[in-house]
Length: 136
Image (cartoon, rainbow, N blue to C red; front, side, top):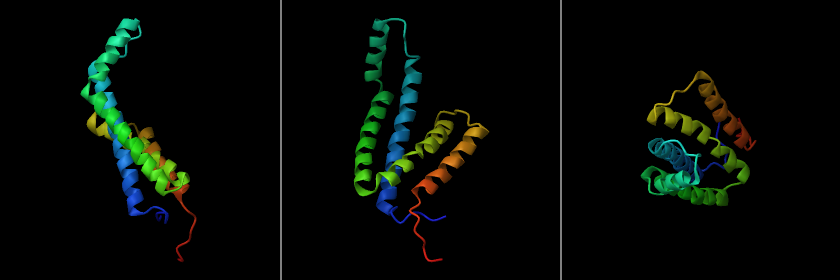
């Protein structure tokens, strides 16, 4: 299996950076809400209080910053390559997030998730293939 010609080192770097920012954001959000407790639904006052606590929670705040950085990384990425290449690559967060959650948050990974991760990785490379032959 070979990488598409459109996948240059700077594009690979942007994809990796986007995956890092997005994965970090999701892990930080999970850590934040784990620290804050379950989102209340019993009263509007409790919801406002919870939102206030979220606003000053370091995990939640760092997740928001990471999503902000991911947004600008995404804009840079799609300014360099076709959306048909860039967007399938973002599906790799379905690989990075479960692996990170398993490693950092000690969440279990079941065999079906592992199979799914492998399928996603192969799927991303299939979808991003530019169809060009390399002369072999």
